[in-house]
Image (cartoon, rainbow, N blue to C red; front, side, top):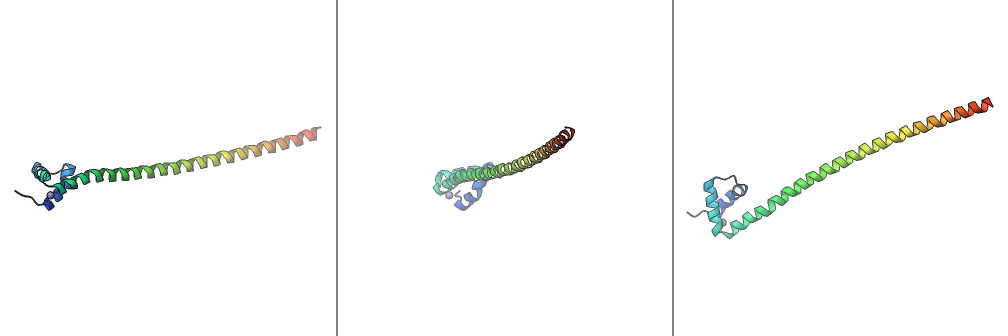
Amino acid sequence: MKISCEIIRDLLPLYHDGVCSIESRALVEEHLTECESCSSELIAMDSVLPIKNEESQWDDAKSVIQLSRKWKKGMLTSLLKGILSATIVFVLLIVILYLFMDIKIIANT
Ligand SMILES: [Zn+2]
């Protein structure tokens, strides 16, 4: 029984993912031994699909990294702002206390 390339190409994605029936698998394999264009189609699937997946996964990873970087940056700046404002308040307090004590010392002497 001769199967047309179109039928095989319909089955190729299923064959490639290993989800077709044993019978279809046998038909595809039989066809692939005789048909160069269909076997190159399968090879193309083999080489194209994983790269696409990796790229999209890489994109996902990149966006996650960027997001976490942004988040960390936001955390860091808010932390720095907090530290800075706390330091300013602390310094102001010391200056005020110092001035106050100075005035006291001057008043005492
Ligand atoms: Zn073919």
